[in-house]
Amino acid sequence: MTDPEKRGSSKRGPYAKGLARRQQIIDEVLAVYDRLGYEGTSLRAIGEAIGVTHPVLKHHFGTREQLFIEVLREHDRRFLETAYDGDASFVDLIHQSAEHSMRVPGLMSLLNSMVAHALEAGNERSRAHFSERYADLREQITGLLAEGQEAGAVRTDIPLDQAASLLLAAADGLGTQWLLDGSADIKSGLLLLQRLLAPPDQQVAQADG
Image (cartoon, rainbow, N blue to C red; front, side):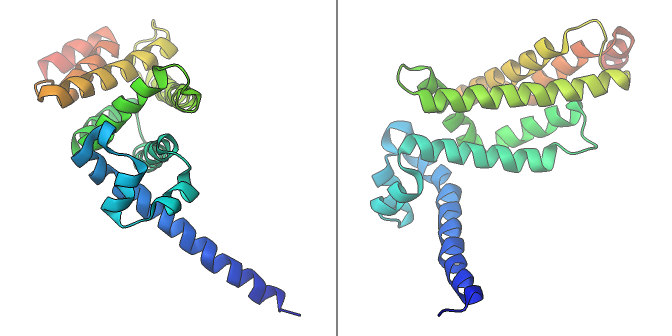
């Protein structure tokens, strides 16, 4: 009979290799997307560009839609790992979100394409993903705004859930304008919104500064 410990390790080897392969694909998709765009980035085109067979991509992700969702989910996870910690404020999140968006424009472009895809009839998987994503982000931003109220950095006469939705809408809209022609100043726009959310006495001080 085979040693159970050896049996387990033999299973972990291929499993770990499969996870690494999956991660490699996720990491390389954006470069292909930047070059080929949404319509040109089929599973087969991605496979040819990164040296992975079409059956392997189908095995790991099933469809192009699921692959793109996993790319976006992974980048969200990485961003929140670095930006959202115990010491972060909503102001920190504004700064880091703006910098991240401009540093990885292909990610913003893919996000916009997939949100548009989710709004079309029949794309329930994408719709469910983005509904959950925005709900999670609103909850996190609402929590940061509540902490800002306690610290005296956010005015107390506003509904925080609506303010969180407004921040998300501003970030997405400014990002779209910046992608189109580069004229929108994402960071300045978000910082203006931050100033509008501050108590009146701080708004004057920030404007003077």
